Length: 309
Image (cartoon, rainbow, N blue to C red):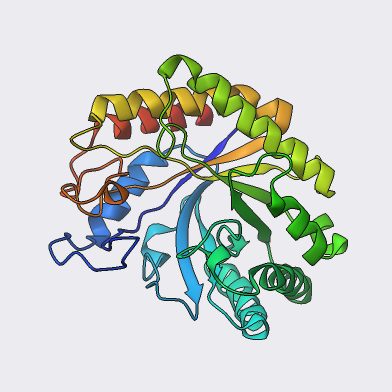
């Protein structure tokens, strides 16, 4: 059975220049919570993905995840690194406590250390922060005796990618042996468009290669892969119907590999458009910015119901 998740926050900024879109509709907490309740019906576990950055330029999104949790919905807390390795490790320990106080869930240490700014790979010492953060997280979990899954993630990193050697050089093998998941962020057909007929094969190649590289790094085969971010934006160049078709192709391809490579969680970026008329980074939503559903919303609800059944 695959656990699902979604990011409910709103990107109200240009992700390159970090300029705020003043006309982006604000978050409606109750309508967001209603959509999450609807999507997660019957799900054994449903993750609500939340982003925080230590000493970084990004505001926490969503500001407070508590209204979105309960009835099987738990927090997927992403703590990004913004500088100061020692300070980050202390912040990680606090994040473990916060996840426990929110009823459990999981903590992702750092956000894509293999990608440049504004992601964590653009900050000096990011691999050292990953090492210190993972060690701090597993130690704090053991000290408190709480149910918090701990892991880290990467954007697509095929065998031979410098990411794997950098992790091996920085992170203590004992920390790697104690993680509970390894996250993969990938957006097939978004940043590198491809013909529809080759999409399933490309998705399968990425997921299998990710598992192969993780095993070579020393991460036990029993540690599941979490698809921590995936999606496809709509807009003038991309129809909403095409979004649903791509999302279904990618999801069903991953599901078909779930037992082979051990994928047990699938999370979407994200629930609602930040600005449906804005740049494509703002148009990944299953809902338009006025909360009206795109075809992909109904598709994802059906996929979740299938897995729950």
